[in-house]
Amino acid sequence: MDAEQVNIRSRESQNTRRHFPDMCMSNPLMGDFASDWSLLHDASIHGRLVSLNKLINQGFSVNQITADHVSPLHEACLGGHPACVKLLLKHGAEVNIPNVDWKTPVFNACVSGNVACVNLLLKHGASPNGICDVASPIHEAARRGYSDCVESLSLAGASVQQSISHLGSPLYMACENQKVDTAKKLLELGASANVGKDLDTPLHMAARTSNADLVNLLIDFGGDTQLKNAEGKRPSELVQPNCPVNLVFNKREGRTEP
Image (cartoon, rainbow, N blue to C red; front, side, top):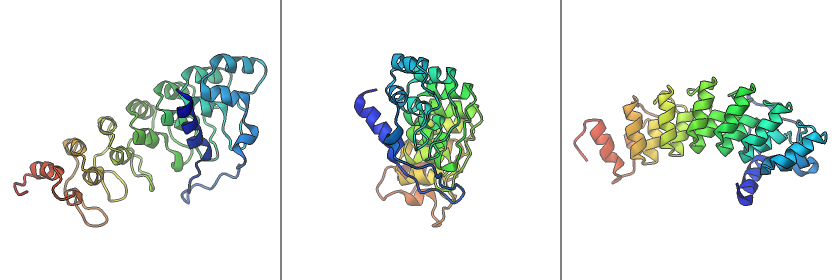
């Protein structure tokens, strides 16, 4: 990973603040992120295994956290460095600690899309589910199109059917971001083609994004073309005029008119 990618991921983890749903109280442990950033954190985010090992041997705690409750393990996962993750876990890093944004190390591993990191964490007892709905690992993996991470989380117990009020289901997230391969993986793992966000189904989202591949995939797995959303519209009614996806719906619904 180059320096620019690391900086982007660091900013995403460190500086983003969420508007939390009512069911999740805001974590009070807030502060200046850089104020207690350690050499251990720096080595972890950049994947500097030799330096990390040396620091641990010098007595640095692998569970040292910043004011924002970010641990070295969070950063190794965000950077996508399984060797660093393995070393930190070997020396007792806590696998389920959330930061102030309720993101656990396994959530960060889903941000980076590194399935080796995800599997290491799960092997060492990490929960496949988030601490709070605002940071659901399987939703994050689905949103980014990391099918391997989705599968590992599902096999470890994360629900492919979990629908979160502000996100919808993992399948809905995959469709919203047009991740066709991940949508297919979720369907193969048992996700319902008709569970989306409130009354908006994955097929509604596929129609809205004019993605013919997703429309065909969802219908193949039982997507109901007649379900109406909160506005009383069927998926086909969300397709833009003169869009080729209209032909897909006509064919799949047995209609001959344009």
